[in-house]
Amino acid sequence: MKVDRERLVEWASTAIGTPSFTGDEQAMAELMAQTLDAMGLHVQWQQVEEGRANVLATRAGAGGGKSLMFNGHMDTSYSGREPWLRSVPGFQPQPFERDGRLYGLGISNMKGALACYVEALRALADEGVRLRGDVLVAAVCGEIEKAQQGDAQGAQYRGYAAGSRHLVTHGGVADMCLLGEPTEGKLVLGHFGSLWVRIRVHGGFIHTAFSEGRRGENSILRMHEVLAAVQKWLPTWEDDPSNSYRGAKAIVNVGAIQGGFGWRVSRTPHHTDLFLDVRVPPTKPMAVARAEVLEMVRGLPHEAEAEIYVTAPGAEIDEGHELVRAVDAAHEQVFGAKPERDVTRWFSDASALTRYGVPTLNYGTSTGLMDVELGENLEIDGLVKTAEVYARVAMEVCGVA
Image (tube, rainbow, N blue to C red):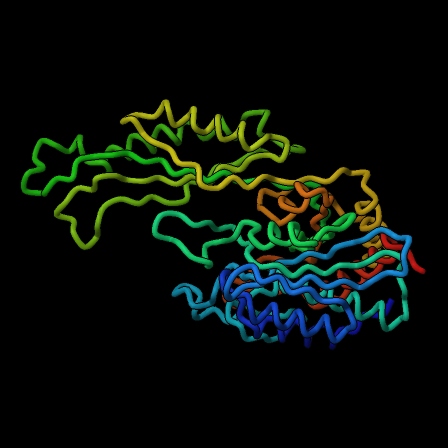
């Protein structure tokens, strides 16, 4: 199987140069649609909302084989305009190569995988390979872990599988799916889900001049006591055997705290909020996790209130699934050794796909560590080999006509 390295890098560079921050993926969708249409695939355009779309393309098989989906999100984790990233070249939509690596915004998460899908199908076409089953390429919007909350409203906050949830209700289903998140070349047989909770403590809205002797009513100071109680609770969640999965423990992040008015510190805030990201194993129903977290909040001081605003389940695939066997074999053929297994605590669109009956395996190229000076990058040799693995998996799963 011959993968064209130069062609792969050229397309990946074009993808990097097509900004697609969450909520504004339209241009990247147009690039995907144009590319896949020119390759002779049947292209469906799914307008998810204004300014953002999914693209679902099908390489029709001869019949009699199973269907395989390659799924990848187009939205990038960052825009590159963030003050702390503006000077980091690898977080800009401007591709460049250095020491055998390709740098640029979104290449790792996950335009590199989209480039591998495109090149895998091109390589199959170059070899004249006709498959029995269909191959679907789904380029989706809105995967990045973010959600609308409070004043943060709009398309740029609608992530957590927004595109893939639309995909599966509008024809985007297959017998199985290979999702090319950057997994370091490991097979991720399962990943944790997320539950986000806002914990609110109320207090008095008091002018500084009249606050003497009333510090106990200050919601920020009350939250200090609540946060201390939450910190004591964290190990009980993380060490609970029901929250472990394949040897990996759950984890909780104290992600944000909001209270008061920087432009008016002559007043105490009427409430202060604490935000937690609670990771949940795929084996625990989200309703059970929700009930357990709310029970914890009921025991907090100062009559703390809770609002659950994200429930994104994890996902898993059986070790004996034929897709796992196919990736095992293809990886060994290309890399010379069998791939390792992994469990991750990040989220992926496997969550939405598996709940619609599409067994999904996360498997993608190695990122290495993010370069703190140069930014997001992927090893080009890794991209080339991963594209070949994808092509071989398609032949094994779909069958050669």
